[in-house]
Image (cartoon, rainbow, N blue to C red; front, side, top):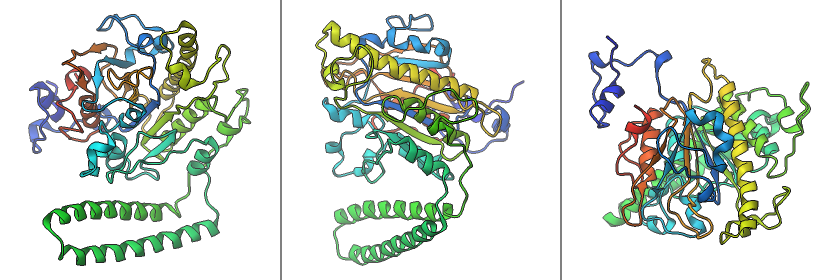
Length: 426
């Protein structure tokens, strides 16, 4: 008889409650564990045109819409969802920034920690032993710290490569060490001042001060981590990924957006393979850039406000198909690349594709385009949920399942009302 695991038991009774260690429910050997080890999010700022993205049929026998056709070879390895929302999030361009936290800035003024995004939470749980707990790439906008601060992102492939694989010279290391010591000293002073202040303020103000001190502790941990890694050599890596000069490599590398998309995906794979990070967020920029593709005659933002004009939709499909083709290539490479244990990065990485923008044409935040792949989960189906008035099912229900599959026993996240374990972990 197969020994049940703790998580199998919890799923079997339809709940997700952490239990004490029990002899009868011992953990399986590491070689058979289903839990993912890594997380990657890819987020196109303007989402995708809904009419080309969502299948009509549910279940496993759905026909792939035009934008999903590049993913044909992977259809058994990803799940797609219709009618996922972030309840309470309004429209406008700002909804793109809410994809990973389900919370608008205006609704978290008194409690900034509500703005913490899924990737940032994961960086403290599964990424805190790597050089880069969170690698935030591309246009950014979706990553928020527990202090309610929107985190910057890196769009340059050259700088990403240098950050990951080029060691600082001795003088720069010494300078960085001095700067870190100075920052730590400043935080010591701030913390002591805060302790004295706490004795003279009201209970309400003390709660605000506690939030502030929590942020300070987060900065202290970051400084300690940076100091620890100063003298640790970075992995050695040939720069052919950004130069195109590798042995026998006939691929032309273009570092200008959007052609650098493939390069950024390759850098992401190298970062995961070398365990430089376990959490990555990659955002495709919005803006009104004129994409250098044949058939594109208007700016990107202008095309998203298509009004269902055929010529605009045709151009928009060219751009969005490019994104999905690059994403499909990324999945190819994730399946081909092994981690240190010999497993494919695809099988050990929960991969999320989606946006906080449901329909850029109307600035709607409803019915968000979402795909989940890899990570040892059960895939191959299109899931459609019922709408309750304006709202669909909370996207954060999916996030709870991703957290649990990544080994984090949280029962809720943001506006979740449950989880999707029955769909993805069965």
